[in-house]
Image (tube, rainbow, N blue to C red; front, side):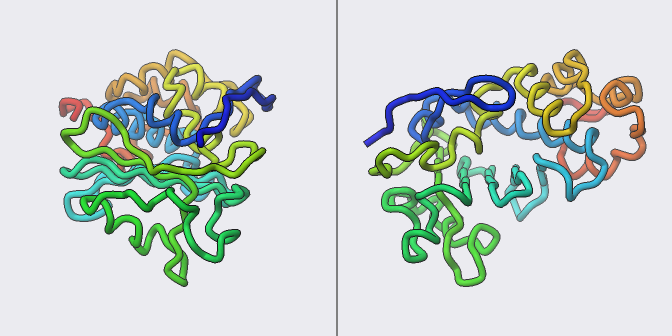
Length: 243
């Protein structure tokens, strides 16, 4: 059964607890989600030249015909989103979740991946998303076919009295609240610097980068320093149209 909505206090204010059920209703269409993920990755590339310290990443050439957006918070929580011609597959893992496979005899929590269709089934066992023993590292999962009208998830009996049971609240917060202000709040808390909201809005709109825009976000990084990141992310450049 879905958990009742609740509110919790976090450093940046109050946050409503959600599960993958709620996220499925609030995620945008695949193309819009892909754009958002590229924006998040580009913002983090500018704010954190050190790749190891970044929260959000995007690899436009992850595999043949596949792109991958990812998040990792450095404390064991992460998500991966694979974009392909088939659609999109979302895997999230909260290491403190009571739904972790490591508290369930090495098996994904019932319902989390049981209903993943054949179209995306290979991602459940994908080595990048499993541990050394082949255990799927997942507490939340969603998918959407290219022609589907909505996001899908499994039928899950969530553990009782669990707070943020599957980790969806913290894992997918910036995918659910897609405002520039939400990223500004996150980045100011994480990087402990002032973030220019107007510059964030420009990147959320996938505006091609220029030196002035980059310096607004990080005066210690130049546009030339970002060439490899721009290419890997597939972020629009001045001589190309947004894709």
